[in-house]
Amino acid sequence: GAVVSQHPSWVICKSGTSVKIECRSLDFQATTMFWYRQFPKQSLMLMATSNEGSKATYEQGVEKDKFLINHASLTLSTLTVTSAHPEDSSFYICSARLRGLMNTEAFFGQGTRLTVV
Amino acid sequence: QKEVEQNSGPLSVPEGAIASLNCTYSDRGSQSFFWYRQYSGKSPELIMFIYSNGDKEDGRFTAQLNKASQYVSLLIRDSQPSDSATYLCAVSKSGGYQKVTFGTGTKLQVIP
Image 1: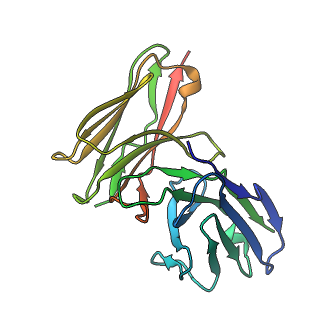
Image 2 (image 1 turned 180 degrees about the vertical axis):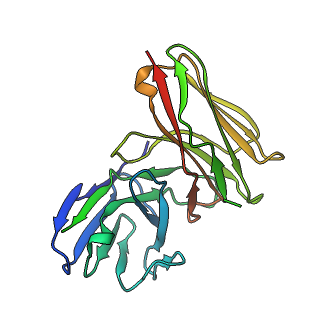
Protein backbone atom coordinates (compact mmCIF):
# COMPACT_ATOMS: atom_id res chain seq x y z
CA GLY A 1 0.00 0.00 0.00
CA ALA A 2 0.92 3.64 -0.23
CA VAL A 3 3.13 5.19 2.44
CA VAL A 4 2.22 8.18 4.56
CA SER A 5 4.94 9.47 6.86
CA GLN A 6 4.19 11.61 9.88
CA HIS A 7 6.72 13.47 11.99
CA PRO A 8 7.39 13.68 14.87
CA SER A 9 6.02 10.47 16.34
CA TRP A 10 5.84 12.06 19.78
CA VAL A 11 6.40 15.48 21.25
CA ILE A 12 6.25 17.05 24.69
CA CYS A 13 5.83 20.79 24.89
CA LYS A 14 5.16 23.44 27.49
CA SER A 15 1.76 25.02 27.82
CA GLY A 16 1.46 28.11 25.65
CA THR A 17 3.94 27.02 22.99
CA SER A 18 3.19 25.90 19.44
CA VAL A 19 3.87 22.53 17.87
CA LYS A 20 4.09 21.65 14.18
CA ILE A 21 3.30 18.19 12.86
CA GLU A 22 4.22 17.15 9.32
CA CYS A 23 2.45 14.65 7.11
CA ARG A 24 4.00 13.46 3.87
CA SER A 25 2.78 11.09 1.19
CA LEU A 26 5.99 9.38 0.13
CA ASP A 27 5.11 7.52 -3.04
CA PHE A 28 1.93 9.12 -4.32
CA GLN A 29 0.31 12.49 -4.78
CA ALA A 30 -2.43 13.37 -2.35
CA THR A 31 -4.73 16.16 -3.39
CA THR A 32 -6.46 15.86 -0.06
CA MET A 33 -5.14 15.02 3.36
CA PHE A 34 -7.13 14.61 6.53
CA TRP A 35 -6.24 15.34 10.13
CA TYR A 36 -7.73 13.29 12.95
CA ARG A 37 -7.46 13.43 16.70
CA GLN A 38 -7.92 10.47 18.99
CA PHE A 39 -8.32 10.66 22.76
CA PRO A 40 -7.69 7.54 24.87
CA LYS A 41 -10.23 4.76 24.35
CA GLN A 42 -12.12 6.83 21.78
CA SER A 43 -12.41 6.64 18.02
CA LEU A 44 -10.78 8.88 15.47
CA MET A 45 -12.46 12.25 15.16
CA LEU A 46 -11.92 14.19 11.96
CA MET A 47 -10.58 17.67 12.65
CA ALA A 48 -10.14 19.06 9.17
CA THR A 49 -9.75 18.29 5.51
CA SER A 50 -6.67 19.77 3.89
CA ASN A 51 -6.67 20.55 0.18
CA GLU A 52 -3.52 21.38 -1.73
CA GLY A 53 -3.35 25.05 -2.57
CA SER A 54 -6.49 26.09 -0.73
CA LYS A 55 -7.81 26.68 2.77
CA ALA A 56 -8.58 23.73 4.96
CA THR A 57 -12.14 22.76 5.80
CA TYR A 58 -12.65 22.38 9.52
CA GLU A 59 -15.20 20.18 11.24
CA GLN A 60 -17.72 21.73 13.57
CA GLY A 61 -16.24 22.57 16.94
CA VAL A 62 -12.63 22.64 15.77
CA GLU A 63 -10.97 26.04 16.15
CA LYS A 64 -9.28 26.98 12.90
CA ASP A 65 -7.15 29.66 14.57
CA LYS A 66 -5.82 27.14 17.05
CA PHE A 67 -5.18 24.30 14.64
CA LEU A 68 -3.46 25.82 11.63
CA ILE A 69 -3.26 23.62 8.57
CA ASN A 70 -1.09 24.24 5.55
CA HIS A 71 -1.07 22.02 2.46
CA ALA A 72 1.75 23.53 0.45
CA SER A 73 2.28 20.70 -2.02
CA LEU A 74 0.74 17.46 -3.22
CA THR A 75 2.92 15.52 -0.81
CA LEU A 76 3.05 17.66 2.34
CA SER A 77 0.50 18.93 4.83
CA THR A 78 1.29 20.43 8.21
CA LEU A 79 -0.78 20.88 11.35
CA THR A 80 0.32 23.50 13.86
CA VAL A 81 -1.21 23.45 17.31
CA THR A 82 -0.88 27.03 18.51
CA SER A 83 -0.74 28.05 22.16
CA ALA A 84 -1.08 24.45 23.20
CA HIS A 85 -2.74 23.59 26.50
CA PRO A 86 -2.90 20.33 28.45
CA GLU A 87 -6.37 19.58 27.05
CA ASP A 88 -4.80 19.48 23.57
CA SER A 89 -2.79 16.44 24.61
CA SER A 90 -3.90 13.71 22.26
CA PHE A 91 -2.91 11.37 19.45
CA TYR A 92 -2.94 13.27 16.14
CA ILE A 93 -3.06 11.23 12.95
CA CYS A 94 -2.97 12.32 9.34
CA SER A 95 -4.43 10.42 6.43
CA ALA A 96 -4.16 10.71 2.68
CA ARG A 97 -6.16 9.30 -0.18
CA LEU A 98 -5.03 8.69 -3.71
CA ARG A 99 -6.06 11.28 -6.25
CA GLY A 100 -9.04 10.57 -8.40
CA LEU A 101 -12.77 10.60 -8.49
CA MET A 102 -13.27 6.90 -7.97
CA ASN A 103 -13.24 4.84 -4.82
CA THR A 104 -9.82 5.06 -3.27
CA GLU A 105 -8.20 3.75 -0.14
CA ALA A 106 -7.18 5.95 2.77
CA PHE A 107 -3.74 5.48 4.28
CA PHE A 108 -2.60 6.72 7.64
CA GLY A 109 0.58 8.14 9.02
CA GLN A 110 2.03 6.61 12.15
CA GLY A 111 0.53 9.32 14.34
CA THR A 112 1.95 11.95 16.69
CA ARG A 113 1.42 11.71 20.39
CA LEU A 114 1.33 15.24 21.79
CA THR A 115 1.73 15.84 25.49
CA VAL A 116 1.36 19.39 26.78
CA VAL A 117 2.75 19.98 30.25
CA GLN B 1 -28.11 8.40 14.97
CA LYS B 2 -24.39 7.90 14.59
CA GLU B 3 -23.01 7.90 11.07
CA VAL B 4 -21.16 4.63 11.64
CA GLU B 5 -22.15 2.23 14.40
CA GLN B 6 -20.23 -0.69 15.81
CA ASN B 7 -20.59 -2.81 18.90
CA SER B 8 -17.77 -1.73 21.20
CA GLY B 9 -17.20 -5.23 22.54
CA PRO B 10 -15.02 -6.71 23.72
CA LEU B 11 -15.64 -9.64 21.44
CA SER B 12 -13.85 -12.70 22.75
CA VAL B 13 -13.19 -15.71 20.54
CA PRO B 14 -10.95 -18.75 21.06
CA GLU B 15 -7.86 -19.16 18.94
CA GLY B 16 -8.68 -20.79 15.62
CA ALA B 17 -12.32 -19.68 15.61
CA ILE B 18 -14.03 -17.25 13.27
CA ALA B 19 -14.44 -13.70 14.52
CA SER B 20 -17.38 -11.77 13.09
CA LEU B 21 -17.41 -7.99 13.30
CA ASN B 22 -20.38 -5.92 12.24
CA CYS B 23 -20.99 -2.33 11.24
CA THR B 24 -23.96 -0.28 10.08
CA TYR B 25 -23.93 3.15 8.51
CA SER B 26 -26.55 5.83 8.05
CA ASP B 27 -25.59 7.68 4.86
CA ARG B 28 -26.97 5.87 1.81
CA GLY B 29 -24.60 7.93 -0.33
CA SER B 30 -21.60 6.10 1.11
CA GLN B 31 -19.64 4.28 -1.56
CA SER B 32 -16.34 3.22 0.00
CA PHE B 33 -16.07 1.01 3.06
CA PHE B 34 -12.99 0.23 5.07
CA TRP B 35 -11.90 -1.99 7.91
CA TYR B 36 -8.90 -0.89 9.89
CA ARG B 37 -7.05 -2.64 12.69
CA GLN B 38 -5.63 -0.51 15.46
CA TYR B 39 -3.31 -1.75 18.15
CA SER B 40 -3.15 0.26 21.35
CA GLY B 41 -1.10 3.42 20.91
CA LYS B 42 -0.64 2.85 17.18
CA SER B 43 -2.12 4.31 14.03
CA PRO B 44 -4.87 2.43 12.15
CA GLU B 45 -3.74 -0.14 9.61
CA LEU B 46 -5.91 -0.83 6.56
CA ILE B 47 -7.17 -4.42 6.52
CA MET B 48 -9.85 -4.39 3.86
CA PHE B 49 -11.38 -1.96 1.39
CA ILE B 50 -14.64 -2.78 -0.37
CA TYR B 51 -17.01 -0.80 -2.56
CA SER B 52 -19.14 -3.38 -4.36
CA ASN B 53 -21.97 -5.43 -2.87
CA GLY B 54 -20.99 -8.94 -1.94
CA ASP B 55 -17.91 -10.53 -0.46
CA LYS B 56 -14.25 -9.67 -0.81
CA GLU B 57 -11.65 -12.07 0.48
CA ASP B 58 -8.01 -11.45 1.31
CA GLY B 59 -6.23 -14.24 3.12
CA ARG B 60 -7.98 -14.92 6.42
CA PHE B 61 -10.13 -11.81 6.08
CA THR B 62 -13.47 -11.51 4.30
CA ALA B 63 -15.41 -8.28 4.05
CA GLN B 64 -19.10 -8.40 3.24
CA LEU B 65 -21.10 -5.43 2.00
CA ASN B 66 -24.85 -5.05 1.69
CA LYS B 67 -25.71 -1.52 0.61
CA ALA B 68 -29.46 -2.14 0.68
CA SER B 69 -29.22 -3.00 4.36
CA GLN B 70 -26.46 -0.44 4.97
CA TYR B 71 -24.39 -3.11 6.57
CA VAL B 72 -20.76 -4.14 6.28
CA SER B 73 -19.02 -6.92 8.15
CA LEU B 74 -15.58 -8.41 8.58
CA LEU B 75 -14.91 -12.10 9.14
CA ILE B 76 -11.55 -13.25 10.45
CA ARG B 77 -10.95 -16.97 9.97
CA ASP B 78 -8.53 -19.00 12.06
CA SER B 79 -8.25 -16.16 14.58
CA GLN B 80 -4.84 -15.72 16.15
CA PRO B 81 -3.85 -13.98 19.41
CA SER B 82 -2.02 -11.42 17.26
CA ASP B 83 -5.41 -10.44 15.82
CA SER B 84 -6.36 -9.02 19.21
CA ALA B 85 -6.89 -5.32 18.55
CA THR B 86 -9.60 -2.75 17.98
CA TYR B 87 -11.23 -2.99 14.57
CA LEU B 88 -12.52 0.23 13.10
CA CYS B 89 -15.20 0.38 10.45
CA ALA B 90 -15.09 3.46 8.24
CA VAL B 91 -17.14 4.80 5.34
CA SER B 92 -16.78 7.46 2.70
CA LYS B 93 -18.42 8.82 -0.38
CA SER B 94 -16.74 8.16 -3.72
CA GLY B 95 -13.68 10.24 -4.53
CA GLY B 96 -10.24 10.82 -3.10
CA TYR B 97 -11.26 14.18 -1.73
CA GLN B 98 -14.05 12.78 0.43
CA LYS B 99 -13.59 12.44 4.17
CA VAL B 100 -13.57 9.06 5.87
CA THR B 101 -15.85 8.70 8.90
CA PHE B 102 -15.05 6.14 11.57
CA GLY B 103 -17.09 4.08 13.94
CA THR B 104 -16.03 3.78 17.55
CA GLY B 105 -14.44 0.39 16.96
CA THR B 106 -14.90 -3.14 18.24
CA LYS B 107 -12.29 -4.56 20.56
CA LEU B 108 -11.44 -8.14 19.65
CA GLN B 109 -9.76 -10.52 22.07
CA VAL B 110 -8.51 -13.85 20.77
CA ILE B 111 -8.01 -16.25 23.65
CA PRO B 112 -5.11 -18.72 23.26
